[in-house]
Image (cartoon, rainbow over all chains, first blue to last red; front, side):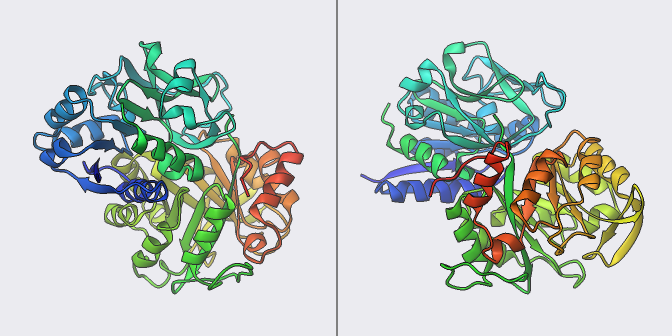
Length: 218
Length: 255
């Protein structure tokens, strides 16, 4: 049976990149996945899987998401209540947190026990944003998680960010990267996953992770 | 750890890549879409697409070409040329660009940098600085492909651009561009050491040692080159292997 993946369009970022990466990953894996880019709450509620991309600032993105009629309710229903697989990317991952401290304090979706704060590498010569390809180290939970376990220690992903999610709930940490100290790279729960990096821009590694998400049956 | 990036640059004029190309497996050597496909498969870390005559022709960038190029990229794509304001940035992002490079518009009106950085995030606003040496230790910003002097000091301007919210500086030495003599290391390090955002070194790469120098001596976080890759002198994999041997951490690419 064909599945529908809803990529939420809330006026943020490189939706086209996300769309074509999910379409290509699905096609290469032989899945008959239908990708829909949408700002309609009912379409999200009816989808089988949900992707929240995001580029920009936390506050702008949170406002953009809440400005869509019924969208946060639809997300709560589909993701929290019905347990449909969810993938948050970059700021889409940040929005899973309780709060974001980027240009003020903003409410997130509160799905992960953590807050989004400015990167503060312990080496002053390191540039901000943290931009480029970095390696991902999986935690014990990450090695077991059905989506992230496809990654290996040699894999690089593309990061571009100045803020990161600081987790209270350490069990939600699936992977981290090093940039003047550990930086949260992947968070996840039984039905949700979020990456700080951009899988849609991470060539073969990104496509591998997206495929694992599309094949995930939590 | 974070790796140094190698970025091939497509200089596009009238929808075709100029500066010549010599890939063996290209169907159409001057087609940016074909080149993007090959560079993506070769494991380039990013791709930069510059519509080099958009500003001087006073026209909009070729959106359809950008869109078709982006279709081939599963790596970050930076697009520049004739970008004036928020409408242009939005159109490029929708066409598939991940970052947008500003030059002439930012020189004419620096506050546009902060306006765009606030709207789209610093991470997607690259400010391109084309600099020419005018005296020992002094470089001036030029626009329109090095034809128009601006009177601006390149180091002060790069600092201003970073302070206004540029997420990255694409620094090109107009003295070195196309010479294959190597980056202007003094200029690159002076700017990289004085700002907190990443600097992409550009202009002058002729050998793989030049790429190493850009990172090791110029303190750039990424190196950009056109001719050495387009003409087939070196592959992306050879460039990375050379940098690794020289002690520069890179993302080694498969195949």
